[in-house]
Image (tube, rainbow, N blue to C red):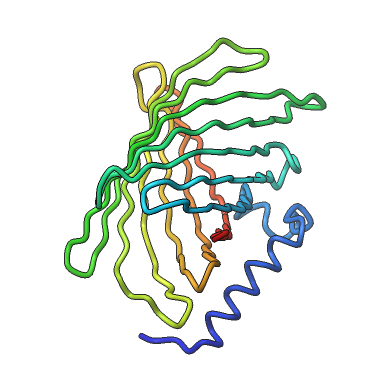
Length: 222
């Protein structure tokens, strides 16, 4: 099924509108369905075919608690070859706990591999994190995800749906599972995306499930 350019423009304007509105305002209508809203802005610049610098800003809103989490993350990516990249990242994240704010510093290494299989593209990432907390002991965490998307490129915005599954491993066990369903695109230097995410936090034999709505705008600077 094909869409015209107007459909892509409407999608892009919808994402921009969502960025301009504090989603906590929608509490009365959405609190029984959506638990959190994530807003992301990503900017990157390529200095050559192998080296990319990026900066990510993220706001996380809880419908019940208001703005409780935000972070800024910078990194450098190196293209090892046509299918493998390596990244060094650093994140500074702030959490609201009751009336108090606390922070976490997180250096990370991430390796990404991608492969085209016919009309499908598969990507796998491996992330290694050292988490330094203001009020808690330092912890190590491992994350891995698999993303699958077809080469549909609908409209001039090159829209394509995708699914993604991510596992978190902490203290020798799976601590969190994320399942994504989204749409991403690219037009010129702008890369919009929206997604729904089901997140399951695992505490031994008990799982706490949260439904999250997210949107992201990526901007290529050169």
